[in-house]
Image (cartoon, rainbow, N blue to C red; front, side):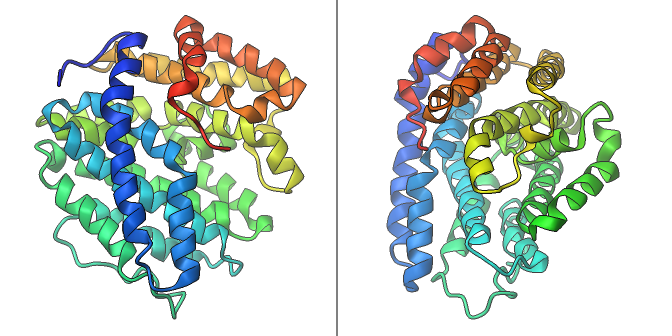
Length: 353
């Protein structure tokens, strides 16, 4: 296995399809077997369904394993376990009608525990007793801990990883509360952190906190070699919040009709009109590009950004709506030729809808 970081679209596609994605799928298969041992039928079905439905997340996250050098296998093992926690907890929140902020924060503490080897386990389910997942969540956390503590760069990158994890947790809590509280909480969330991205709008910042891309980039570099705290901060700030904002805004773009039908919050609806949306996505892209160019392996990171356009805009939801199709063509142009290359080779991703 070559450990050189690929710097062109074709090499990324080939190595991802042959190396990283198959490994991620195997780990998911193993975790699905674990989930099927959960004693409670409803929890077992939710955990198993989540793995089947969200496979795409781990496949995408695995591509950053191309940054991990000889430690690619360990990175993918960590990433799949961590992402499985994210997806499992998202399902638990979606299926819960109590909208209890304390409960949402407690279960998401598992993500911080995953980045805290040696610390006591939190009581994740203290606000939803009785609840018996047979130790499933704790097994996922333990796998993350045991894997990440072996990464040579983890000690100096742990603080930044926990910071972006905490932002993700805050977003998940505010996203799942009662509908009437979501917007004011997220607006306050931005005002509290506006100094990090004063040129963002509040709903763009929300998107910037909702992605795990930055954490996985940090983890991949941590798996590769020792990094300084300064290098860690540079990597974090290249992904958070601008690239992550672009990532999740594209996700919301393809879900807009579905969310409208289900009366769910969708951040693209806050743009004044179609032109405003295209213009602001372009700004997210430009800011992300400026940051990514400062990183080692800059060509790889820029291709990851361009690949996001292809992965999301190729979704079948876009094809079902003529106006979305038209807007998607405008957005795809922002990614340039590499985005079009990924778009026409989208067979690799098989994104579920």
